[in-house]
Length: 144
Image 1 (spheres, helix red, strand yellow):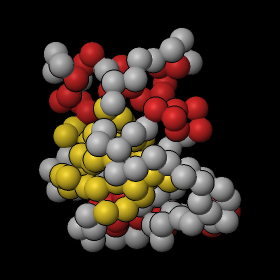
Image 2 (cartoon, rainbow, N blue to C red):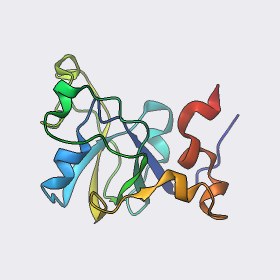
Image 3 (cartoon, rainbow, N blue to C red):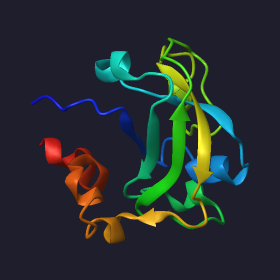
């Protein structure tokens, strides 16, 4: 199965690995986001994307005083360059074993921070336009 490249990306975020809520609370405008090797050559400057959170499976210890995030879209981003191999990771990663491993981050600009008003996946599921993107709503579970 091949998915057509549209130039619009859904970046999947697992808060149990990368604490997007803490990151977005800083209102940082420029950062990086890791992409997968199988689509790295399709990611180009000027393309847009959204950062999607599925089920927040963080433990009470990981959350501290924060609440779990609802499934939804938490940011709109612009891709600034092509992915380049790096071993540096954001301070918001929870798994230290990822530190020092080669990854493919791409520089992005956060155009819209939706931390306090995320677009809920449950609502988007019933939208005619967003419902056409099976990965946006269902995540990777549709790949079975």
